[in-house]
Amino acid sequence: MVSIKDVANEAGVSTATVSRVLSNKPYVTAEARERVMAAIQKLGYRPNQIARSLRSQQTTALGLIVSDVCNPFFTDVSRSVEDCAYKEGYSVFLCNSDEDDKKELFYLQQMLDKNVAGIILSPTQKTADNFALLGIDLPVVLFDRSVDGLDVDSIIIDNQDAAYQLAKHLIDNGYKRIAGVFCDVCTGFDRQAGFEKAVKDAGYEAPQLIVTQPRIERGYIAAKKLLSVSPRPDAIFASDSLVLSGVMQAINESGLKVPDDIGLASFDDVAWMSLVTPPITVIRQPTDQIARMAVDLIMQRIENPKQPALHVALKGQLIVRGSTKTRPG
Image (tube, rainbow, N blue to C red; front, side, top):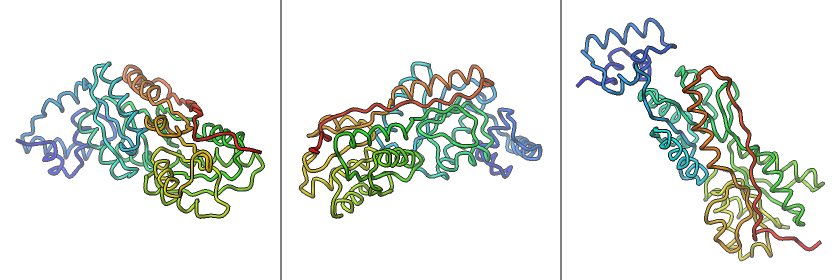
């Protein structure tokens, strides 16, 4: 049986281009369209049900691309997106980009092939380039991060404000040598900026900072380095739950006690954080709200493709627990 890939190979184009020709979408050159049609005729290709749905625009599937499905934040958002989409009669294709723009491009092509009704995406640094390359013109909602040059719906957390509030909580409780471990992604940089502003506003000296990958082992290495400095920090701010796990491992190995010897605070309210002793002070991100809004915006965009793009900035919630306490003056 002749497949859409066979047609693409014969015509010398991508499968995404064949899909766009089948669905009569724009951003395909006349020459490429002619090659695709010639290949279809030569090979005797008969579009399957997916291709027929491409033409009729009746697919009921959404694409969801996350940066790291192992990160509890993205796990929670993914689950909530699936729940919300199911209630609307839609299925979800989940893909993991690993912060890799090439993987993102590959999965975007796959979603065009399947003619998903819309895409919910945690973008990479090259998302705008990937969209331009593929000529994507279907409903899109970005979450967790925005992208300059893409006028599409987006939902983000005000990371600078949330990080400021979390750092200020540490400062207000008497911590003076606050170190930070931040992830080398745009959300991490925003959190770092909020953290540094709070420290500067308090009149403290420049804090000890380590920027690293959002991985448990990288958080561990960073914390080991911070704890080896004299004088050591009296609190550590972790910019996500994966980094926090590594930081906690290093603290436990050091023999220090939280919060008596060192305070600890983090972004993301993962279930285990309220169960450990002591429970962790966190910024809780509204994952359910992000998912509901993302699906709602996709549904609105499907119904009204011409409506202006909506950009939403949600607030994180400070949850104070036992890993931070008032220090003696």
